[in-house]
Length: 242
Length: 136
Image 1 (cartoon, rainbow over the protein chains, first blue to last red):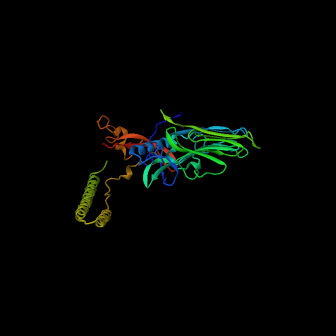
Image 2 (image 1 turned 30 degrees about the vertical axis):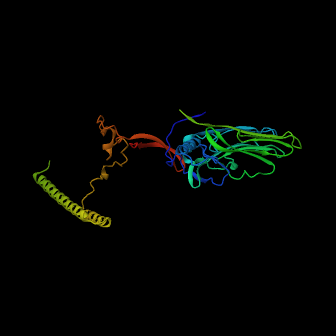
Image 3 (image 1 turned 90 degrees about the vertical axis):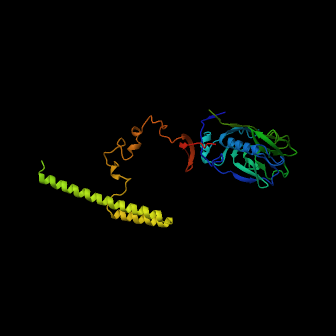
């Protein structure tokens, strides 16, 4: 864990240097606030749950350092990647917490040489509303948009993905040739919804585990036999302070 | 060495100048007193502004430097001046500030200097704010 220098930021007076966008979650099949109040919860979140979601949102925005994940393929070789550190592209240095005072989203991605493997971080804080009522802060981006993700694509249509987001908009509708698994997960103390998906075929052996944030696809027969894609998200690392 | 006539002439000039200054100061005082009286009876902002404008115009007509707060000539702007020299703000210079007054140095009572980072024109800027926490 990297150590940052303590600082005081004068932002928008809400814990952030911006006003988080509103997200109405009423129509989504999966959604969760950072503190875990989700689609399956009953009633309204308590004040402490809402306050907890704000604190987690601040931690995520100000202190995220890296996403620990892997994206691997058996073919072509040399594509495997691990872990993506949050930077401010085109700069390649880690983005220090105090440098985030002028931003409203944090975006970084890391790709293999041909772009067939990719790890992404896209942090956008959202204010979640249910039935017009504020229920807390969550990731203001759908899982399908791959805000936190690990992706791998091998030859012959073999691929596997793990996406984390604040909600799921449309992947719950089954698609032929793709297996999806959905779950509520906690990573680094932050609640997300997870999509784990991978290609399916009579020639493929597919495994998707959203709870475990893993997915894999192996071509066991056919012209692509032996091609494999495998992804996993394991942790979020945060800055600590001296 | 000046002669007696020259000294008498200088004394006469000096008396006349002092008399003229007294008269001007008296005129200024009259204008200010009148302005104060009128302002007390004014019914609105518009009327107060008109009174002040008229009084300012009258003061200018009196040909007296009635601005008691500004002394531009005391500012050292010539090429021989440097930052070591004092200008009109010398009363705030460190050596002019009493130490050991028990007043807590140069900060207002209850305030502390707080380092903050703010966003200025798209860039993080560090600086110091004077901050006083609200009492519950």
